[in-house]
Length: 137
Image (cartoon, rainbow, N blue to C red; front, side, top):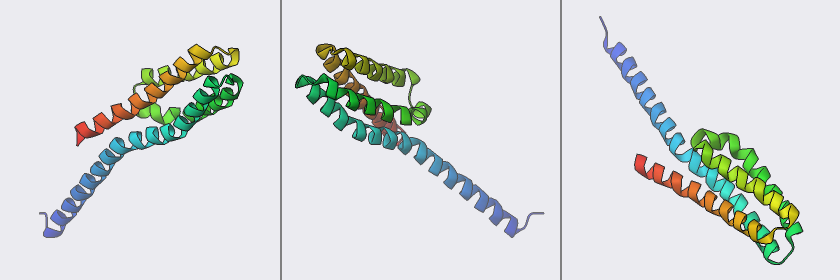
């Protein structure tokens, strides 16, 4: 027969399991938003700087900015793949790669368009995850 002490242990285990589950849910909801927001905060100034260089007809100075954007994205890509649709991230990666090539050849109009596309894709990822968190809450 089970004693009062056994019931307390069972209750403690159930409570611990519930708390762990809630913490995991909180992590799953909050982590993607924090990761993409932090990446966006690093990438946005670089994008603005690159756009400024391109508009000032100094495309060669935009290249290091774009290369740094690529590095930041590659550093976080593995973690982002856990939380976001891979096709969205592949699209962003392709836009960054295309921007690098366009900066190398000096295609100003297309480069500005591609940089704006990167900005839009980052904003989309931020908004997409905000909607998911709101839906879960």
